Image (spheres, rainbow, N blue to C red):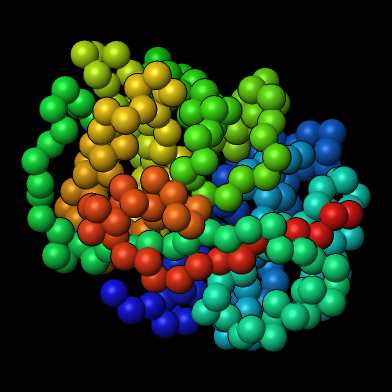
Length: 276
């Protein structure tokens, strides 16, 4: 599957809109509230102190880096004591990376963006012993959230690039601030009726963004994520989506797992950090 800068912009900006929607749902707090600021065709998002949603994404695909807008973002982030994190696609003008280095940004790592065309999706066999369901609000929503926090607090190095790991209580607060109004479908996976895994699915411009998946540590290696991927791909295809997209850290088990499901690497993002 080939991705040019047009498809890269479409994917990154869809993720930016999702993160902006999550940040906008955060109520005003003592840190000054959330921020969503445009920059160079992309968006800068601040959802709260150390939130995993804090990032600049989607910039530089079809316009030069705007130093004035970036300075404003850096100033606003500095007021909140937050480092600036930029997720820069390899499909943008490479000179932007040099400009950011000149401003003091340092490379933290990489993310891989993988996609699959849903027009060629075929239903494979399910995972024995694992069931999946799309949940509504209520008791299951709390179960979903608790699994998300426990999974994120016990990362095994197979997900996308994360900053320094937070204590569970701080992580629960950061995630709770943004996930309450999350505009996506929530899925639970069960083994013998016991909830053991969670995942999310968001639609944007005929793109299906697969996000937020995790499995409780004691149930990893039993096909839970395979079942959740299969279920979300079917639902995305049935909803009329053209592509499904997932982000992983390079060379990880998560990348291997989704490539086994037919995903292909379409581009990468450099993670650049500037301490304030």
